[in-house]
Image 1: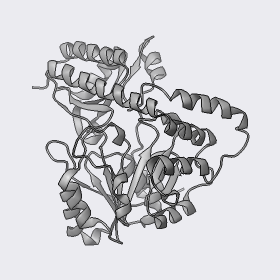
Image 2: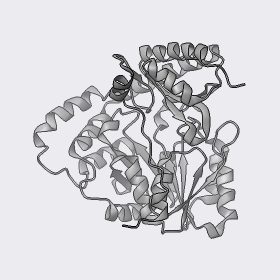
Image 3: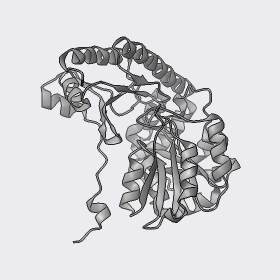
Image 4: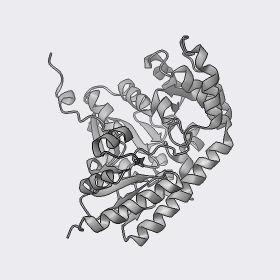
Length: 373
């Protein structure tokens, strides 16, 4: 059976290396995974209780409208229920938005070294991906986004994805640059501006402005949120779309029925009510980042301050070699050569003892692998 060139050339998304596989491969009993930007606290205790209480109803299909969850999101995030959609993780929402608003041959625009799902979903839909270079400090160039859009009218750019903060760089944009971007591209009827805000709750940049605060002022601004990070529910797969009613009307036509399972819906309602857990998630992340800043400075390894729950740092060595060396020491980090950083690793904040184990392993690794001259 013949398939398109886009599918033949598609490079599948590569996930972080599992703990069990690392233990088997290297004969280890202790392995610490700081590779996939997961919440080290595990789910909220209220979430675990809610899930246990709902286990006896899993022979029933979930509520296809996600009524209770959408009501709770509306209440907690102060948005109309008519502007809330849900998906099986943010990836499903990204995929559906491209399928809904792009035709084969159209394009999406994003940044260099942005979340790889944009590329995968677009290419699978026969949609082109155009990118704007990062600045030297690895921040996104929103002026460059707008300039690119206006200079290339024949490119048929239908969606602009702004991952803010961005993964894997951890950088964010805001301030007057964001305001100018919205003045130039907001309220247009030929392009949608999709702010992907998986890590918003971790931001400490005083100039940052969450899109949820301004999206209702613009007819073409959409916001993606996730329960995988600060809410500690990555395994349950739940993403949220905040968007104008006309976007939600199309989105709900296309999404599959029962796309969000019952346990995810129930867990998310409980998670939204647990403010103490969310505050603890932020606290452990910020303390971990500050520890990494201090230790990487001591080790003379350049890094970028992060508004996510992870840090990108320069090993000054071939990162794949460093990655394997650390695996043998029971530490799983994330190489990011596929994003254009062959000498960098991304390290997720874990619990305090996990962070310390990682730094100890990195210090040993530095003594074992010579710097690139």
